[in-house]
Length: 638
Image (tube, rainbow, N blue to C red; front, side, top):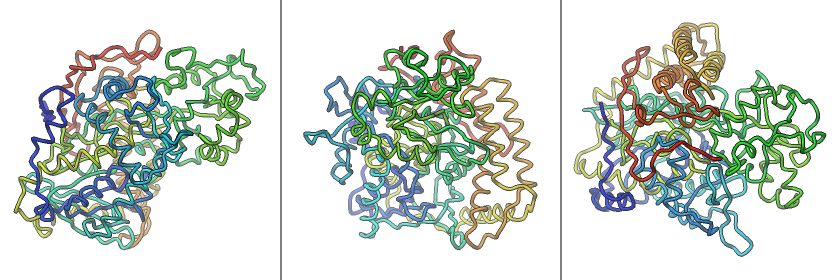
């Protein structure tokens, strides 16, 4: 089946404006007649909830944290992109569009990416008006810095706390609507099922994480803003609570899952230190503005970094990619680090890292300037690694970070399941096979503040004078019963293994076989292992406690169960895509110098998978990608 993305006609510069004009509106006096559910309170969810409330809709926002402020968006450190051209260095909306398409290795939809670049400038104005404390130059103008994959400075930042400050801005806007009564906030509630009635999204089933009570909520539209699924790998930079359950339950009910194999490996993370770890820590990509990446020229060099002279250091990114140097895109930098470590040049006790060195920057700029730019990041590294990055280089290595795959959505951000909208990292739409740094915050806020509020009206206008679905219908009864049965099954298996032991084994299998590099044999082997492990999980997992109280073991058990099914689909998607592009690197498909080799003739499409039952292979649906403005070429950062 070929999917219709509902991309509006006309020149790319005019598509969004024309589409907004042609989209049906809901008059202000009619908006209070509509109920909208938003699941998730990160940047995409909080901004969507706040804006829809401001417009006058009746909004319910759900998050499993005790406060929306704890959404994982706060962990995004380095900045947010916008085509303001404040540095007068040649930036423009079109250049941001082109850089994003190219950075995603020509596997994203042109119309969506151009819209994102257009909206980027308005995001900064919105956030400044909210009081977000962006860094400023001496004269008072907003400052910018560079990120990977670009040759301009377009990244706005608030030291190393950009995500947190933007989240606080969205949180303020959301809580204002809570106070005004247009938004109803349900914290410590987790969505465990979506309800589909007459082929449309009708509501959700949620569990109160304190009392265990299951409740039903109906709406005219459901918005999922629940982030990515990187924790399927167990070790990742994501918060441990991040999961796939919301979008996976929607997938099981008919929503297509697009490009699950597009997983971003971030090159700037603190290396694994041992089997005791359950999480990895990201060091912001912004550090690569002033930090230089290197390894010793001699393999297995055990000298301290300060004892290795410049002539015996291999600044391999500068050597291999002189045009972009240390600011190549994430997928390129990650593969280069892996190649050096695999070749025996790794540093640290476990030889599993490379150096990120600020010695030259401190000498050139002075320690005070470096502290002003990155002080909190340096402090975080020192607390975790026990080393002073002002005195000795940081040790970094790639780790699972962002996921470009997600539920398929059309230009209106609606999935193929009518009435179900998906925003932010939970959808697949804007980043292709590799996300450029500082673009996650941009997409989340663009979707929530600007795109969704404009497009959801087209769906709601057709529901005028129709009441929200009844929560006592057969569809709600069946969904609630299914959730209760699933919880009961997990609690009564009474096996011998912990949830975490299963999760760790699943994650290691995926990292080894479907991580930074994949091949047909490893992917086939991984899918078989995951299938067997999933069956063992349902017969030997041990979940302590009960379902009528706070039970974090039960929470994790449900999430890991969904990770198993997602892991199988991830391998199926990677196995079917016989090419290398962005974060998807098939060893069989690479250039002579080890770069990703695309197959535009056969794979220039979005792979949108349709659920066919647990353990069964998903059905492939395609959305063909057409490139009228950014013509595909071999990516080169040399």
